[in-house]
Length: 345
Image 1 (spheres, rainbow, N blue to C red):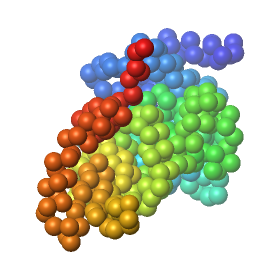
Image 2: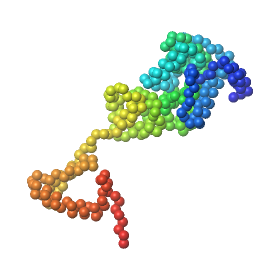
Image 3: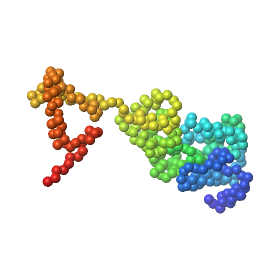
Image 4: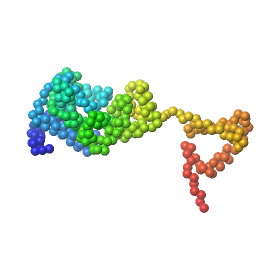
């Protein structure tokens, strides 16, 4: 921060009546993060960066204006998934604004293709809430190119820390698809080069139909999404998943449960096809058929030999088993034989 910014920041810091600049209206009850101390410090750092961006806008002479919410379009870089499970938190935000007004302005830019309209840099949920309440949106309007917009948008999400892993991954992919460099993506998501690469790789491995079906999956982290990406590479896995999401089971499951169902759908649960092997005598006569299905096996004596040969074989089986154990070792209950024991001299 340069000397001028520090001076401006100190001016704002000494004004107790100035509302705290955060991603949404602050609640009356203090909230304590359940994350580690390090995560809390990083969160505070991101919030301060957003505060500084808004303070700088004020310091640069950018006025707070009121804008009709019908004239505000979402950012071209979609970051949030539609969330049917977030209705309660959105209603809480809307009620807060209805009771106390919009305490924190949003950040907009003039739409690059229609100068009579605007696009949201951050404050998307506040714009939605105010539109629902049919109230004007208090906003700062700044000149932002696509790169600055992406960074500002990522800044808000980093400060709030409510984007799920897959939302962050898809946001990174969409930024790259629209021509933003990996450096911009790193700044927007406050991640290093390796993490940005992992986010984009996993997002590209996910079919759009899977993302639409699963949704935000708030409790699913990178490890499980990576497992799904690997599972989709299996033979026939992508086809099985495509069939599953095309005709999913009855609704009522949450996003995390839908993820688990998709991961399960990658597995081939069809029963193994039986393998039949004909057993011949030394003279070439067919005497039995050995049918194997997975770990199970069935020996069927040729009908022409009658039950007498079956009785004869049953009498010999104990001795045959002992010969097998002497040569291969005692198998465990799973049917897997242990390594042969070395004979002592």
